[in-house]
Image (cartoon, rainbow, N blue to C red; front, side, top):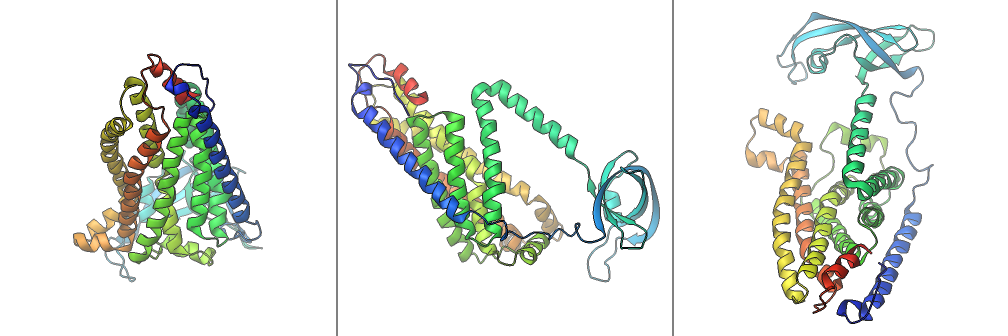
Length: 411
């Protein structure tokens, strides 16, 4: 937020360096407060659940193997309703032989669901569960495919493209992703598991993430600071409305088998709070996009229209913001619809009514999450625009204002 100032311009008037110093103090205070909150909420290693992995017990381990043969056989699965009133898959089972990395031969059976969905073939690299009680021979079960190399290749391709196209800003954005992952894995997720308020942990973690990634990706400037203020408003508002919406809609956070397993693993968790916290985390990306765009729009308009009043700049920026709101809301809806696609397909296959579908716990969570995120997003646009117009240089007749405004935005 440093600035180079000359003479004879409203942009270079004393309030600009004064404003820069004030904003530095405000952001520094926010950063210090966030750090203190993180220290107070930092999860103790002894409080985070350990040794709860079902594949880490005595006589149980996971091993890597390569499939050498797959032989289908009829195991009597007809697709009829089973004894537990659940539908079964019509198809064959499969006897699979694989070579474990240590040279042992592993044999296991795929049920029709696994056989049909996995479409396993010779040469596939898999992960198996090895069961070997003391004094007994080892048996094996299929756990999953090995996906390390494909994921690594895609991540490297993404990183290279971002760095090549985005150059320095792209490289710094990648650093921001690393910061985000560290904050989530070291603070947010462990903090929730220790029983702290999930929403409070999410808000503090999100604030720390946004302070770091905004200045990393977009540079230290008054423009970035205005985007930060709008983003922090969006985070706080989403947290409050998320709590209200979760309680009002009676969302329990127990909509799937994984949710029940999580509660059994960490009984101190408050699952409705986890639902509300997920609304804060899920909307960060789109919220950041909207606030940065609005701040940039205000600065660019000030550069192009040096004589325009603050009100005129606000109205012009809001016209851009309205278009951005429309596209961003669709982004949220499609993202959440994609994440709940399996549940939506299953409910559709059951031919349940639309109202019944929308009010079920599985879909209601996504509906509330979408609506809460959209409300926070919509309100963040005018709030960010107001901050940006307030902090942007005032109207001026200086012919060099445009160049100086752009420098002001990146200084």
